[in-house]
Image (cartoon, rainbow, N blue to C red):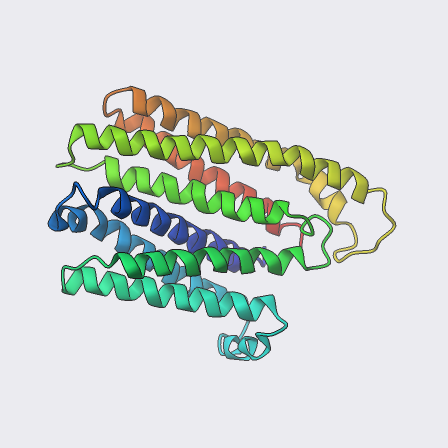
Length: 281
């Protein structure tokens, strides 16, 4: 499969953005209750993970170009190209996030301003990322479902990573741990339900598109989607199972096994759904 660089790129960058959003919300909610050194202790590792994930994601994206230096050529058409906009916002996102990580690592300072700036840049980058495929000529991509899937993965993977980072570690107050876990799981449940509901609209669109005589590239994207429908359904089942396990782990005192299994299931589900997405090209 030739699209693995894009699979790695989109998932890593979206995971990074989701984790950055979670860190920003954590900082905003804890500004009046958590001392500065406590905030840094909780967020330093997730911040470094988010930065490394974004850096590896951007590196993987250059592999898809065949010749990595072609990435500079992609920046020439910012006014008309969603790809150029995506590269610019991804680079700005990594710059803001990387600067925040350096300040936290070497100067022991967490910059909420930089994190919020990274959040905005990252969310705009995910929009541009989705727009590349929505404005393509592949029928199965030309629907707002692409944005739903991309933003859904951003929140799903980001929330799951945050759950692992903030709750599965020593030295965290049990009350705070359960409160953070409950909030994160609530986000996961709502996000998953909204994505599942949107699938009814998407499948209705696919049914109408199959009756159209429009020719797209590839010539049989709908047939390709039908062939992969089983894998697509499996991805949703694994995702629902992962969210369910994470929800149950919140109700069971520090059940790390159930929590870890649920987090792994969410990661596997998002990879499976993304593989199906790019297999249609």
